[in-house]
Amino acid sequence: MSPWETQSFTLAFIAFILSLAFYAVYYWVKKENLARLAYYLLVLGALALSVNILARSITSGRWPFANTYEFLLLLLWGAGIAALYAVKRYHLPDLGVYLSPVLVALMAYAFYLRRAAAPLVPALQSYWLQLHVATAIVAYGAFTLAFALAVMYLRRPNPNLERLTYYTIAFGFAFQTLLLITGAVWAEEVWGAWWSWDPKETWALITWVVYALYLHGFTRGYWRGRKAAWVAVIGFLVMLFTLFGVNYLLGGLHSEYR
Image (cartoon, rainbow, N blue to C red; front, side, top):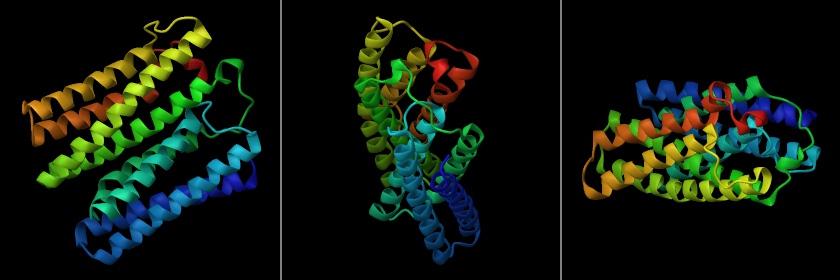
């Protein structure tokens, strides 16, 4: 790894940890200055991740999308940017209290997986894969934000939070649908079949079904309030298993890209 890549990753990790610490203190003492400081640390972390992604792209001569580590960098960046926007746009200083632990946990896992960039294998040299990864970043970033909003709602029920969670999931669901479509096109290009019930494909579909049930139940009024929030939490846990658990526990065609 280049010095820029190593140092920017370290800076982002430290910024996220400090942000979590200040948000934790803010949760107990409710001093707005602490929330602002924690927010600016999130900004610093997102900027450092931007430098990291750019440095890795320059070093490798490609966008970082070839393995789980690189996907995590993009997911962290996307979720962080979405959170910063939501805090400012909807005046939710408490949102970071519930999202920052997720960011730190994902960053710790990225640290564990950290590796130097390598040339792309032929199967990854596809325009459709780039679209597939891009849609995954948007979808999973939205679901991560929705998880934090849902947990926040469970702690402090609020109709505005409920609606924001719904709209965030609806936005992510559209891209989850595109993820399945672009993944099928890429699979046909690489493996000669649109759908093979590979574990990663299957669990991506299960994730889609869970969020489809959430949207259907919410719009039809089958579940609202805490029930809907718990479905959003379950959807996020299913998403995490799709992202990380499948590769290590179920294997399949995607396991070689860990």
